[in-house]
Image 1 (cartoon, rainbow, N blue to C red):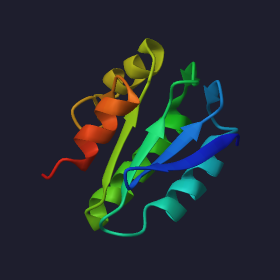
Image 2: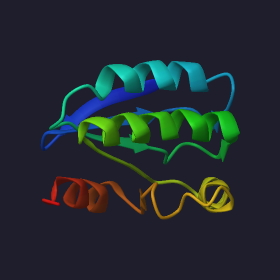
Image 3: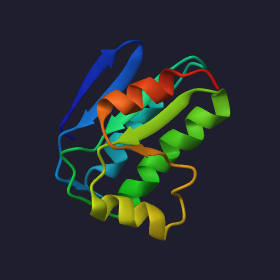
Image 4: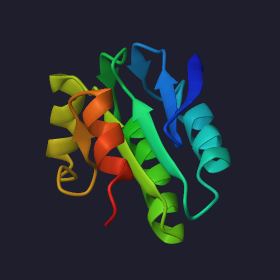
Length: 115
């Protein structure tokens, strides 16, 4: 899996540098998320700006990260998902629980805000 890991304002950003988030990439993404989301105060974002296509296994990997974050009280969201990827999220009826911010700045501001 081609990705970059950065930290901006105490928010970990996993920048997925793949055009396809599918069965080839999903296992690696799951493993990376298991490493990233392990402490309560963590804030993790996945940058999907370069991703043009996602399938159910890719969505499943993201949902694993969301579930893991919720279990320990960490913050988790995505940003930059294009219409095709966002459509998959909506078809799966996950639009209310898997937040997709339009850009990195909105994502960082919102994930850092107290809940």
